[in-house]
Length: 209
Image (cartoon, rainbow, N blue to C red; front, side, top):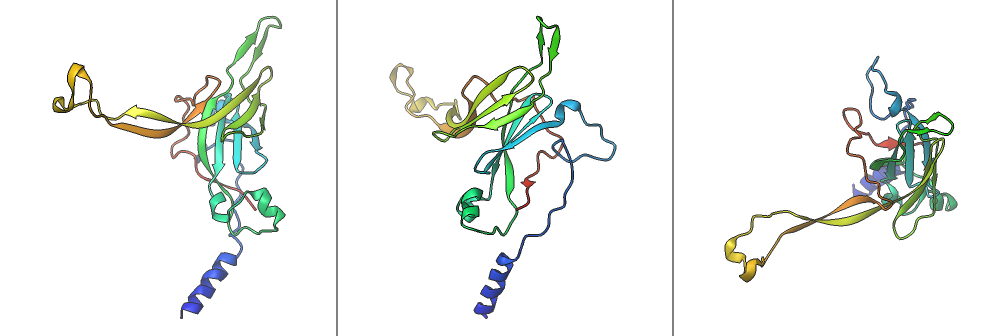
């Protein structure tokens, strides 16, 4: 009985993944029929890094959105390494939202009397180092270099201190801190809090193998 169950399970794992249902869309999120799409939300650039584990997209509003692959731990290596070993994946790659930031703003060139729109024309990944991601983004005028890294930020969870736990001169004997990872942009940028996606958020991205 156990042998039959194991055989059925291995056969299910070896079976090819179900075919994807392809839909063309240049915006994130589900759209209802007849819903108007804002021009700033239209995706204008997309780029994978060389490992295939990270995906960056840019839109006409000057924003860059990063995704990371979620199933790399399941097969124990990057897509490129598995291709070298002639490894066949049993599921479609999935990407989840990582972070986003405002890369470019609209400008005006007074010398040429020309408006420079914020649309992202191209994204290019650079070599990673020390666990940080590096990438270039450009509009019609300016190329920007970005470093995206997760750092632990300490936050005070409770400011209500029991007076009995306080020692002399107002020093506090105990405190409570909460440590949580937070995306960090080294060159002064930060993930935009004003940027919002359609209702329901960003779904997982599934790509063909």
